[in-house]
Length: 214
Ligand code: DGP
Ligand code: NA
Ligand code: NA
Image (cartoon, rainbow, N blue to C red; front, side):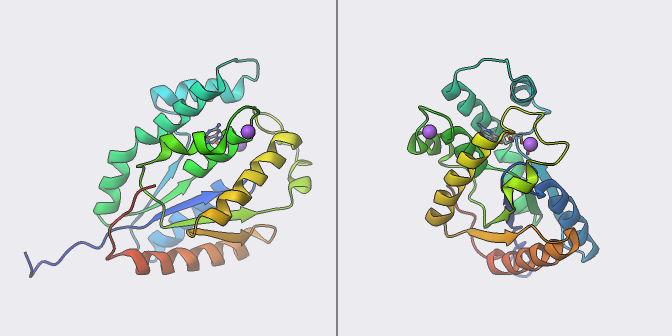
């Protein structure tokens, strides 16, 4: 009723960046920070390795010898996002802000980085997914990251691929007005202060606006 008023929707906040740029750490801290301020928030990560498509994706990422057609693999990653759409919309409509570790832009960047994969083709299966209200792109020194001891375990973790992935991300950055660059070469705490500020601003600015689609 008019007296009850509408529930203000949650914001869809996505973190993007190359491997080991600090996304997961920042996402988890951000959900904690928001909850401390009594802002309803929920963490999600893509690929979601727990679902049936996620198990295939996990096998593909961990086993570099696993050969699957690149186009088929792209659609599988996309399906993994589509599987979660109803859940995402339910959270947002309940006024819960979603903090998401990777999304469609990872899908486009990592697939288009491959030979014979065109960026425009890669964008198509993402059409119609909920559009992020803000994409926080974590910027780091790639050379430094690749020296870390835990770098290099999974399929895409090599210099050549990461460089191409970054190039596609740069193009996406130019094309999308929801992208914001965050200097992730600072301390975890300093980065967190900035992402919390951007997130709170975004929540406020979209709470009465409808969710749009990619
Ligand atoms: P993470 O769990 O965030 O480390 O991501 C796993 C890896 O999968 C990472 O190298 C990025 C890549 N990735 C994430 N989403 C997609 C996608 O939609 N398509 C492709 N090809 N790769 C993806
Ligand atoms: Na990774
Ligand atoms: Na390509």
